[in-house]
Length: 427
Figure 1 (cartoon, rainbow, N blue to C red):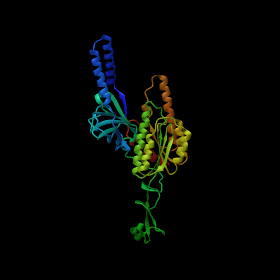
Figure 2: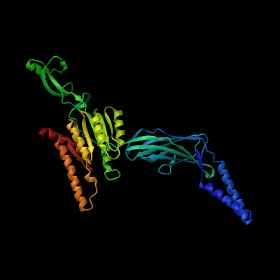
Figure 3: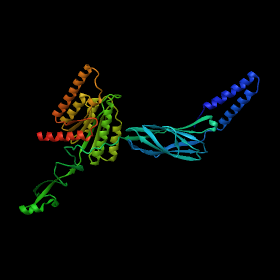
Figure 4: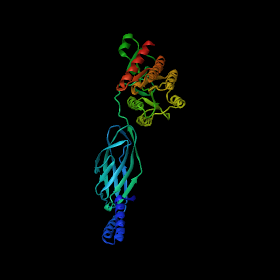
């Protein structure tokens, strides 16, 4: 525990010596008596300000939380000898203290405790204000000293890390992969095999399951007929999150929307037992191969929450996507399409035979209006160039839908599904 003199101690000592010097200067004992009293109080305060042995720690801190949903944790203070009124200062990075039980909140991160005999537990309720990684700590314990002459501090430097997940969007519609894998899931495969969805009838062949016999049709044709069914399989879904925007601008909100939609898609696809992969394109290109299970989804979320706006190294991006996205995977790209290289990457994925869907973020709606005619003309040329990239992707059979600000996420997903159905009819 660290002790430092308070302004009160400095004032008492200074006034005491001034009184002694004044008594010598004027030749009267009254200033000396006042100075002696002040120095005596300072000595008593120093003698009674012995740092007590103490320990402070945070308990019951969860590993993860959800944005906007409060949670509780406990700060325990243990002392070997009783201490008077004390203060606790808790650093809450990305969290907001909303309630305190067992003490009194005196500031945004300051708590006042009454007399502590041996141990005291303080229950703190905090609310995450934004998604991302948050820290609880360091925690500073300041016990009261005699006459307030010395500031005593005990700092717990250990940090408790919390991953704050974004608030889930309501996604009622999911994009269905065209091809399925061999694992059991909730997606009806176009292939035929053992399943619950009726496909067709055919004559019996040696090796067929007798339980699939259709006795009514067999009795009519005087030969054995069986029912063919579509098996339930899962699919491989790879999310491609493009965060290539300039940080510190109004376009940074586009990355926030991408993260929220990606988290909602991960949650929705995991409920249907799909295999999930992730590629995040920002200053550092990261990827995670396809997998299943709640633990895998949590790892994907942690990688997703580490995304920050930045410039993309496209050579590394192409290598990462090539490692993760392989047939029969469906790639869902969430991109503002700020760079033609992103359109080139999507073009490469489509040429390799992958099923690619693109949800484009409405960049034009996030920009401020141009100030003069020259800027307005440059804006129109830039918008036409972006439209040319979209038309090029659409001509290659890549469904593209723009997610405008204020629209629910089901709107672009429904547009992509309808676009895909129309493309099949034309084909």
